Every structure is written in C-alpha cells, then in structure tokens.
Amino acid sequence: MQDPAYKTRLYKIWANMKQRCTNPNNTWYDRYGGRGISLYGPWYHWKPFQEWALANGYNNKLEIERKETDGNYHPDNCIWVTEAHQAANKPKRTGTKNQFIGVRKIHGNKWRAVIDIDNKQKHLGVYVSELEAAQGRDEYIKANKLPHKLNF
Image (tube, rainbow, N blue to C red; front, top):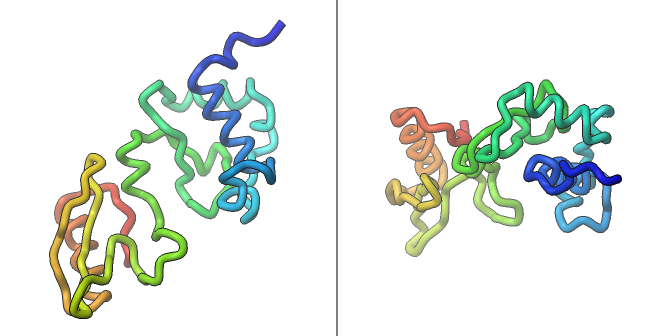
C-alpha cells in the first residue's frame, strides 16, 4: 500500500529536490546535481526528510532553501523560508554579462539598480557605472534591512 504522504506538498518538495540532484533527465539537474549538489544520505529516503522538516519549522507556506547556494541539501545547510525570501536571495542570473546582482545596463552606457520586493521590481536609480549601481543596491538593502543577497 502506498504512503498517503505522496499526495502532500512536503512530499512533492522532497521528490523534486531528489530529482534535481540525481536525475540527469530532470530539467533542473544541470543547476543542482550537474554542478555537484547532492542530498544528505538519509534524505534519499522520505521518512528521515519528513521528520527533519516537521521538526524544523516546515509549514505549507514555506519553501526549502540552502543557506549556502553551492552547498548540499543537508540539515545544517537547509532552512524553511517564504517564497518572497527565497526569491530575494537568488544569485546573479546565469548567462548575463553583468557582474552584479540587480544591475542592468541601459541606454547611454548607464546602469540601473533594481530589486524585487513582493514579486514587484523596484527601480532604485540610474548610475554612471555598474559598480556604483551595485553599491547603491547594496546600500538600499542594508538601509531597509531586507533579506536580499548583497553584491559585496
């Protein structure tokens, strides 16, 4: 008989996490398993992961996040966060030529600093250099005590 847990949101989080790390045919494998991110040994099995999640604050409004984005899925490296917090902590987009998070080149060789807050992009200003735009974004994050990832 199949465990009724397979229908739960938590089970789907676990199954997707496992697939990202172990299945080369998974759409996200190259961002996880393909770059060496793995699962904590006991978490290859549902029950140990479920026990950890429930003992560490999981609820249906939270997502799993790795504190160190290059680290493995391990109890010491994982926490439960809101979707907004997780979105704020994304690293620089891959494939972009920009050096910093939240900085975009615009017309006239100027640079725009932006930040996503509650799924809305906020324009923080236009700067002469990419470096100044990144510093301006970081200052805004610090001044407003936001959870976003800093450039410096």
